[in-house]
Image (cartoon, rainbow, N blue to C red):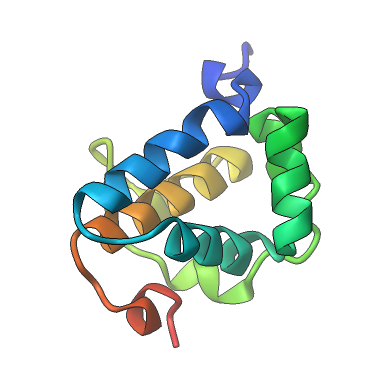
Length: 116
């Protein structure tokens, strides 16, 4: 089975799109970074290192050894697919992140986005 093409894409190539989507709706890069850190367990320095090294999505999520256990509370549809129904683990992590960025752009409070 061939891998989905997003697995080999650089996280750094998509990251600016997350920022742009948030900023268009009055949100900030700081909030995007907070969401990514919450989901993956990476520190800000680790996140910046992945961006600098242009880590691909598969490696980015494979290296996230402290994935937030509350991420399973993320529900909803991204790209026409329910995130909770995605069976492939890496794709589900990518879609969790997409869903969180969507919630940020829709004006949801950070406390709710971070499932507090």
